[in-house]
Length: 149
Length: 374
Image 1 (cartoon, rainbow over the protein chains, first blue to last red):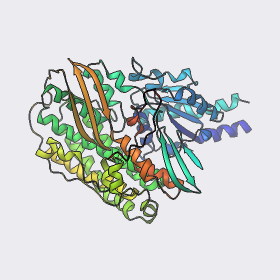
Image 2: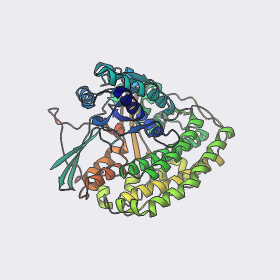
Image 3: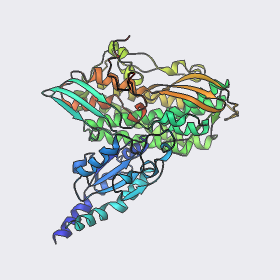
Image 4: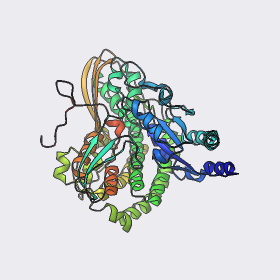
């Protein structure tokens, strides 16, 4: 009974924190576009709050630069359980174009924290990001909540 | 007390640490710490052909990505001693101005989000989507357009594309006066932004503020006045204000949008016929080129060796704007909430800035006051 109640609550109210760990900013712009009335992220019960201490979902963008090597794990640890990590764009997956000779990036992000889902694209369209968050978000958070018990 | 804000904070979209020295709620001094987004982009470009380097230059910054490719292409054209065909120049004007409109709308929406004014935030973002549609129609992409090549633009455009773009611009033009009035004359926004984050003209010159930030403080300087395409073929006047506060900076950005729309109309109406791309034989040499990006002037210095890039250095407007913000605008702001809004009004773009660190001869970073050099 309690679990069912918790599931319902967790599924219908998701707080999101955007963590830009060293990208070109393009994915962040598309995430801001998600808040616009056309895509309206908040009608699905998703709220972008940008505070890791209150987040259920960490949206990771960018190709882990030097400062984020240690800080990314700290941010992840500060996020309360249950939590999931969704990476947006090519950068957290492979480092995209920055991961070549001369570049100072330490991609992929999954070397530092567990990543649950990835949305490739440079940058992905807002609808794709929305679809991915909705596909993986609510059920995964509810399931994580039950696993902890 | 020293209050650190960031790198992850509700008010900031990009990672950066803002250190505010406060007395009670009043901000006495502010300092900014960079270094969270350094990717070594200039180093990667070295030894690459222009086809690869222009792809990288687009990813210096995601918001004003278009202007970086245009400046890069024009610098290489300058080195090779050719000029893009007139049709390509006009097509570049259209994309440049569309990019400027969406960037200004995004900057203003961030400011309204910091003030927690949801109505304006939503209205401005709604307008922006029509511009994004136009960009996608013309170039095929929403953010990183891939539109410029050395010697012109990638694709030709015709009436079938121009008509929906003009329709979208008409929608924005109809919505804009209402939103602008809500901002300019609404009591809540006025109280939170008039007289906050003051920067005088003298301070703006000392802090090297450029673009709408400098023009909001009374510097009558728009680099488009010196660009041949704009001067010779298009009718355009720069917008500036003299108040120098958050209110003026945002209103300046609002007022530049109709000017950009008129430029796009002129470019579409007077579109010359001819080639949209010419082959370019790239020469060895060195040159500098400037352009007016949405945030101010962006400079590219490129040295080529045959058709390879030997050395490149990029100067973006954000670095001087953010420094001017930390030194002058945040000085004496009444509350910490206003400090975050003031920071947002300077239209910061961190991804643009992260290429340079100043070090002394032992390799240690130097904190030097550059403001009194002039």
